[in-house]
Length: 436
Ligand code: URA
Image 1 (cartoon, rainbow, N blue to C red):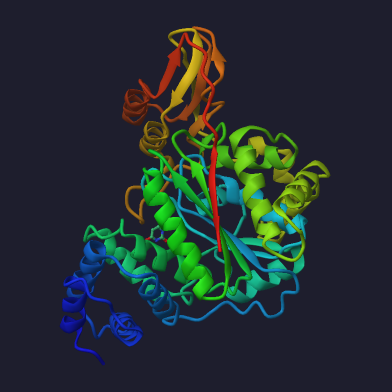
Image 2: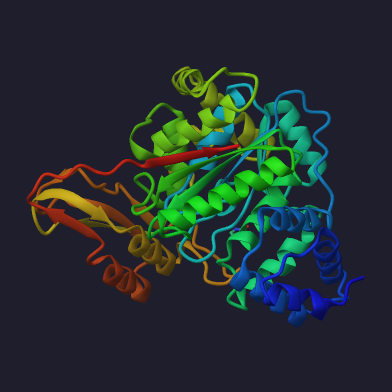
């Protein structure tokens, strides 16, 4: 066992830590021998001085080694997953998992809950009556073996040190550190026994990483760590200045996802979903390149194969798949209100941050992990930049419960959408692909 304060001292002074120093420290912390204050001091030293890729890979491995890996040995197809760094209206996982399954992959997807302004896949799926996200690891693998896609929450056995360390980072101002974020995300994903992983690294004011440089650094860090650990990782940088798709909320995003799988696929949400699914597919022996993988994904959508996989996944996880034909049975808010344009012109901006905060105050998100959410509130029929609007026409519809929450949301939304008399073309949503 290394002396913890010497390890902290080395990093504080900008030195490089060895594999054993990192491993002993993380195991000591996980087992309660190293107290929170020493772990917090090391996290702050890492935040300030950074880590080499090699150190970051050692940290990832040490955190993985505090738990067990998912046993995917009984799965016969390429095993893949996708992770998003989080955005507003980001419902890609709900569409991608069944589509990837329809294209021949096995997708044991482990997802998270929404925190702050970014939504969470589990909160969205749990709006579907009966849908279980709390399957254990054996149940997860059974579902994947039979229907090839399954979306569940984090289990206690996969990289448990991350949960403890993340909670500590959250209260010690050490979350936005590239090596710490890399290790936190990758220790969980590498524990899933994957052949390949795709990362959606969001860039913009509705994302964790606001600048292209930081997003690129994070993407490269995760791709390199994945490579060191023997997993093919591809990162797609995507623009997150405005919400993805026409809805923001929980049940409303499930509705939009199911409609997309039924064939209503267009715009940036489809572009991002198709590209991520294609990158996943092209990283396996099933497709020779990204172009043919894109065609396969389009075919899985148009043939209805992705939709059938969605229904099979819903059934396997406890929900009645007939909900897909009865989307009005999903939870709903008691009131709706259209928000109208005060001028005619072209939409030049839809502020993801303002919209994310408005949905949060309506009750669609949580400030603390233990907060409850309202499954039915949110925004639908959202206009996007580049589209024309007439004065008085709706920019979006709010689904709400009235009262102070509505008043606060309306205040946040007041300047969220900009309209110009000049023509405007929306910038591309797909920014850059980084792969090993
Ligand atoms: N998501 C994670 O899982 N960990 C981080 O550190 C940041 C985002």
